[in-house]
Image (cartoon, rainbow over the protein chains, first blue to last red):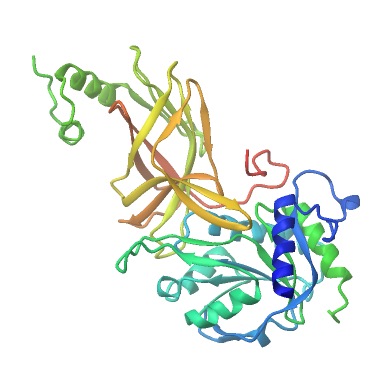
Length: 213
Length: 190
């Protein structure tokens, strides 16, 4: 029920461009209006439930790995020709901007959740390396991916036309989840993300949150 | 009189559907002699223009690039500006590349927080209309790469209109960079 409410809020906010009065708008006062941030703040932080995946180096990546650090988590697939690489390079640009506002320990890491493990697993290491040094790729068994996707209130669907189809695309959530060091989703942002304004938006959220970090 | 197709047998073979020899000849001329490719010194400003002095379809492709892909990834995209230079609408129904198993016009649609891709089977440009293909929006989707491409490589593309006219151009593989916020192309959706 609570979950539904949150998703309804996120949905409404995405439709209205973040203008709903239930959702904290970005603080416009210190933002140069040059690119809208599609950011929504959840009414209350939504805890990520336990999951067990592996990172690109084959090391375990679990709920515990999310704790103690801010994260920006994006869901996609390595064979994605357009929006995933675009979003990852966009996130990198946001992170570069953010690095000028936040201390390194508060700077969120970028996590790419690859939801197409059959094709993604063996490519993930090179994929991650291609997009940036400080960037984590995670994937694993379908059920564990689904656990995490559910916690993010996300969605994906492999658009396989038949069993042997290996050129399929994947429909997936566009939003990037901002996860706090307690392992809770606090906000979502959607591409395209103007780096400067998005960095200001995230800076506002991260610097105001009392999480000990 | 039979036109001399020597050296262009592949292109000619692709036109076997056309009944009229005259139009075959004109098309062959069109493809072989009229497609001019001008490389400017500035990287990325490659312009390909196929023109004809007759009332034939004319299409201009510019700023044609393809982002460098991560290792072993066989799918990619091409971004460009495509302008119908003719005074009549032009419909593109076919797109292919000898370097890829599958090439489609595709559109990434992000709505209700969901990103999906939809194939665009035919693309009509009104007279003088220009369409911008850009990340997160319209793109030429490339699937099943037969080679690996590095920065500076060229990916050949052929478009075919509903009237059977063909246009060839190539995209330069470039390093992906995210435009700064003040860049006018920053905002998607327009």
